[in-house]
Length: 190
Image 1 (tube, rainbow, N blue to C red):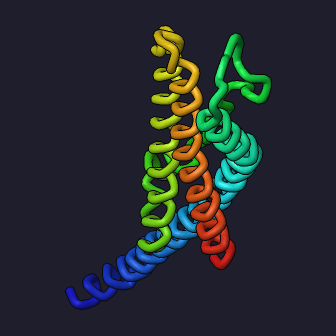
Image 2 (cartoon, rainbow, N blue to C red; image 1 turned 180 degrees about the horizontal axis):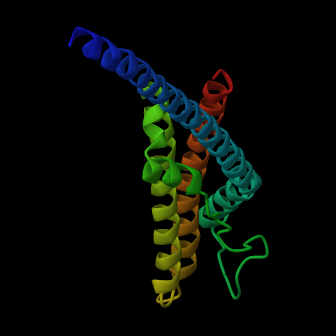
């Protein structure tokens, strides 16, 4: 009887060790896969941030010029707008990407990043969302202004509207650029 128990143990122990090593190998493989995916997520977010920063930087000078020109014209004594002013080439707001961030959330990979890093990334994307909402509001406000010339102050209202909205846009764009720089430096150190 003892001999049979010994034989059974000799057969069971290697199987148990094999199963245990299989679990270890599987866990190790899964951990490496997650690390690789997290590294790719970080790289994709970084690339997306660089692209968004570039888009904002390209229109910032135009928005500053639009804000300043509108202020000057609004405050002048002689405003008469027969057509749109020659410096006005539309609002030129940009569409910012958020696909990498959304993918990180949907896959759960965002949770593999450090908590502070997640907060900073989330803050930037929240600012981007606020920027998008504000630019849509500006466009709809411009479209809904049936007639800026409803009275003699119509031109002044138009330039006042441009000056105020472009001031807000410029402020948001500068903050976004600063937050992009901060986040890109933080992600660089990883």
